[in-house]
Length: 506
Image 1 (tube, helix red, strand yellow):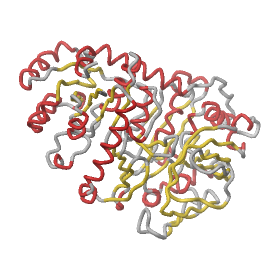
Image 2 (cartoon, rainbow, N blue to C red; image 1 turned 90 degrees about the horizontal axis):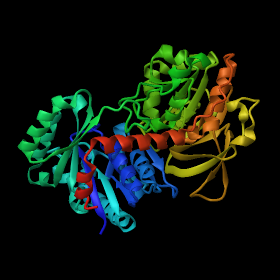
Image 3 (spheres, rainbow, N blue to C red; image 1 turned 90 degrees about the vertical axis):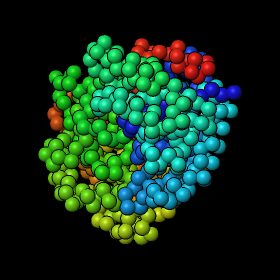
Image 4 (cartoon, rainbow, N blue to C red; image 1 turned 135 degrees about the vertical axis):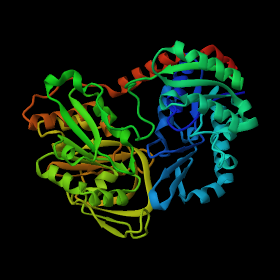
């Protein structure tokens, strides 16, 4: 019988996702066939599986930690908030519909069926399932419609570890309050983990003893505050400056990349690889001066492209982007950002908003029309127009760029930057992307994880600034692997793994 262990948190941001990822790596390294599972994830950061299904990126990272292929059964329900339209409900990787909160809660039985089906399939393939909860299990107004916390733990017969964030303050109150609000259900909680601790643990020890006495549940680990672990963020709340290596080689000439921070920004992890380049400072901002004085400006993806475009115009940020373009700054649009940089976005069926047509920024000679179909597939791209990496670069080196598409809408016009092979579609070759002088855009997520392509873009801009190119190639995949191993090491050092192994009956 498959074993199961669940990680729940006292609230969002407590550290559930990375703790679950660490356990996946630890157990995999012990030779156990382990897989992650989150019944329901609400996130704008998603990825595409080999068969074209959409799932939360946190579970993809956990699958990488477990060294297994990500599947939508690891995240059977994904909710993507999209403003006035409610949330897009994705079941088993495919769009079901858009729903308001009350509609979704009425939909609970159907959603729960999808959850149990996925868990049962995973159980047939793996020895151990590491479940992750969402938010807090003690939201007393939502307990009767819960499908992701205690309901999932009961179905999986999974003992629960409850993790609390001490950096926010009030961690003991959060742990105690969660237990008391859960009532009888708190019997499933077998221990606590305190996360993000700074300081002398000896000062904390009396509190650990007291919470044990008050709840009957031990604290089985105290994790330190980890700076720059090198793994993707679960959401965009903490995004600001991201520069893991940039200050170490300032003599090479610092490159400033500004990602325009959108309200409905999605797939912001597309740009994480830039943060590890030795000459790059990566910044998420809507500050006009930072946008106009950047070396590269990126307009990212959005779950509500039209609404974000209108917000940019309302705040005058569209003018800042155009000013940067006029100064010769490299402007890049990704997915929704690519659509915004075109001449017009049409939404006659009100897929995203009540607006039937909105003027774009007009920097690319394309037009986008929204329809009911969502494109979700992994792709292999071939670069056609080498101008985005510099005319002297060898274009043939970029004939197999991996990535994936997640987008509503189809663009037409001056298209032809890449040739795409879609893995879960027909054998046809599709054209993608557009370029106009120092502005270009694409639908391809994940393209900047290709190390040589990313470095070629940076070096092209360096050359335009009169700086020498940097020849060192940074391996983003190796950095992620090392970060997962480091995270696992920190957890093993600071958590009672023997207790957890007994808990999972391993």
